[in-house]
Amino acid sequence: MTAFKPLVFSGVQPTGNLHLGNYLGAIKKFVALQDTSDCIYCVVDLHSLTAQLVHEDLKDQTRAITAAFLASGIDPKKHIVFNQSRVMQHAELAWIFNCVARIGWMNRMTQFKDKAGKDRENASLGLLAYPSLMAADILVYRATHVPVGDDQKQHLELTRDIAQKFNNDFSDRIAGLGVGVEMNVGEETVNGFFPLTEPIIGGPAARIMSLRDGSKKMSKSDPSDLSRINLTDDADSISKKIRKAKTDPEALPGELDGLAGRPEAENLVGIYAGLAEISKEAVLKEFGGQQFSVFKPALADLAVEKLAPVAGEMRRISGDRAYVDAVLSDGGERAGLLAEATMKTVRDIIGLLQG
Ligand code: TYM
Image 1 (cartoon, helix red, strand yellow):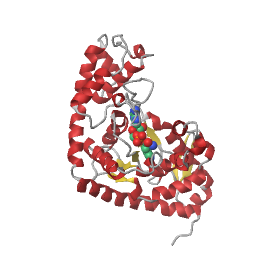
Image 2 (cartoon, protein in one colour):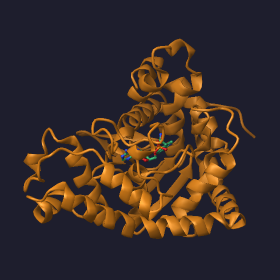
Image 3 (cartoon, helix red, strand yellow):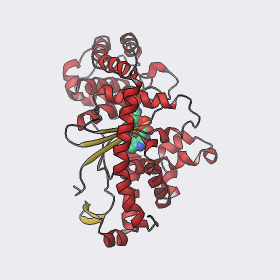
Image 4 (cartoon, protein in one colour):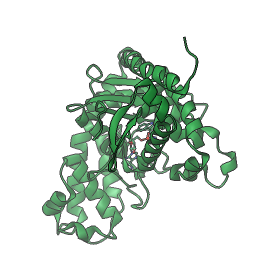
């Protein structure tokens, strides 16, 4: 437990279509957390530059993710919704974190290794430093909790490492300025300026896999559209993709243990559980002993029932560009005030001369 004010932050990149993995692994959690916490949800457009610098439709992609947030039920009046590049303090803190973090930490990131491939020397510096910007996104608000899918776990561990190193490196100045907050780290109580942020990962949908290959995660970048359900897919496409999803010839087991070694079956059960908001055990209780010829149509019906209203609402909201832009501009202003308050203190801690 920290003595920091609880605050939720998370981000989604404006690259490609949002898919069921983003929705179940992240956005549904964003929506649920609104009842219990103050939340800041960000379309991380600066992050998307690491994948593609020249991006003709970046503005529209940014609006589309915003529309998905709003269509899913995020309330931009009670909470904050904005796009990252409006608040330049993210980039400022990221630069400071670039000087705190070590190159070795970045080199160990599995997402960097995957994305850079064999030719690492030729990857952009931005791709290498990506987790430093992500840490800045979170810590510029001193956010305490971050809901994400399982693939972001390593980046959040790095965020804690950066916060801890900053707190240690500047401990005397933090104490001298009286800007530290007490928190428990293991057995110890320490004083630090940045919280050690907790990830919120878990539930049956923390890692949704490709519908074509149960060993690969569902991803925007998979060349096969059959591998994912996009939030914008119509009922026919959703049903077709589930019908064509790879499975094995066995019936569904009655217990979780029976899913071991059956990644495709496990994935479909996880998707059902995520959509129905029940556990995988509960799904198996209902469908154990049934063939996929029975389970797949039930899953398709459930997916259409849950996703069609979101898709419809996304279309409606996307049609009102002025509204979407106003949400982002208002959110950006409110986020900017919070971020600037943090940065004033950070500049003092570091000893930058400011007016
Ligand atoms: P991004 O844009 O790739 O994905 C957005 C969110 O969707 C989750 N997700 C999944 N969850 C379950 N199964 C899947 N197959 C799946 N695919 C994606 C991701 O885990 C994520 O929660 N680096 C982040 C964006 C980011 C961020 C941040 C997140 C930038 N700054 C600060 C949290 C806090 C990313 O690329 O997510």
